[in-house]
Length: 410
Image 1 (cartoon, one colour):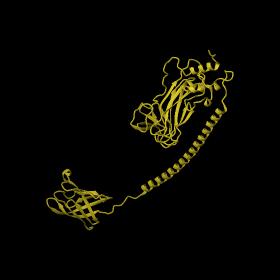
Image 2 (tube, one colour):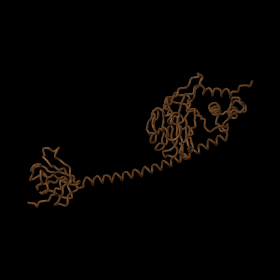
Image 3 (cartoon, rainbow, N blue to C red):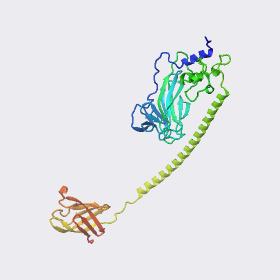
Image 4 (cartoon, rainbow, N blue to C red):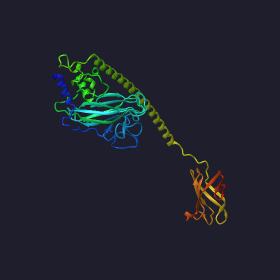
């Protein structure tokens, strides 16, 4: 029988951190993790949806059958809505406890490289920056799992699109946070977090704890080449069989490479921010110019004189072919105010007696309401007609072909 080493005992204690000894299914702490609570048709963009809020950008774009298949259910979220967007959910946690975060990330079908980049934060700290590459003919979902720790009763989980801001890219779906059950001991706030990402070999691990996590949680059996239950002996067991080793030069170089990439990303973001500030200043100048132009237009409009009518039709007119049980020649008085005209009979007939209105209308539209019968019976005796103004002294009415001629002033 092999002697059980101190490293193996430490490994077993660490593994217990991730196993639920009571065999009870941990409670799901994320609300609406698959974005299914409110079913839609097509797509919508909202500042808030059940469980989720917008911290930056135009809003949360929920899709139903737009481009590609969801990972779970019928709906997904695209973080590049009208522009890059950041969303969050405040998760109920307990200080000192460990939690397992799992979510699925995919490129949008048909998008270019650079369109699908995702930044994930837990409790205000970035835990991953991921790139799904260019999109294919359909979604290609990949699970991402992290062990995270809580230092307060409410912990913010945030997802942000950091790719090209062009309204296309960065799909997320099926987000889950569950407590990692452990029999004893404490998880200190700020402890390392691990994920089932690209690491597959012992030379890529930075600690014995990370190697144990990948062996137990990510099913990386190659880390335990001798199948004794202890992964990566170069990390988990030193020459005396007890003390873990420090990071190798290769591991330090890998960390430095990641740091350099982060610095380059920061520099690019600062340049983008400077460009956005310059664009904002230009837009503000354009707005100020437009406000000045609008104020001048409003002032000119307020001070403008009313448009004058093309003719002044006021005065006495004689009308030929007035019809009322025969044809008559009658005299009318026209009063004009602006473009409105009202004609009153001076000589009348059986249909419209003297002193009553015979027609009225608007000079601009040349639409006249004729009074062809008794003014006391307008519902039966009014007809709509047109009045053609030939010149300042001649008008022809229709129907009836009444011809009006201006009379000289007395």
